[in-house]
Length: 72
Image (cartoon, rainbow, N blue to C red; front, side, top):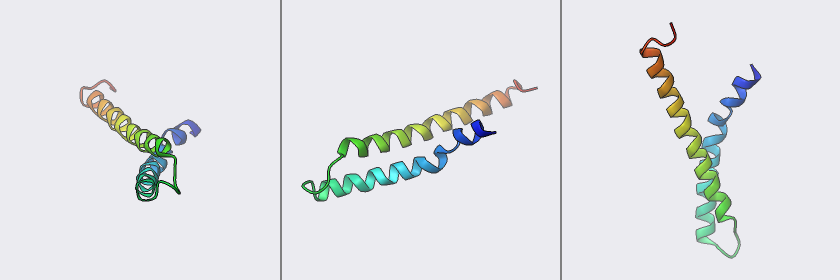
C-alpha cells in the first residue's frame, strides 16, 4: 500500500513544482539582481511536466491493455 501512495504523490507535488517554477521565473525576470536560481525553476517546471506526461502515458497504456482484453 505504501508503494501505491508514493507513486501518486506526484499528483500533488507536480502542479506545485510547475506553479512555483513559473512564479520563480517571473520574479527572476522582473528583478534579476535580487533573485537567482533560473536553472532550478526550469528544472521544477520540466520535472513536474514530465511526471504528468508519463502518468498520462501509463494510463493510456493500461486503458489500451484493458480494452484489448489483456487483463482477463
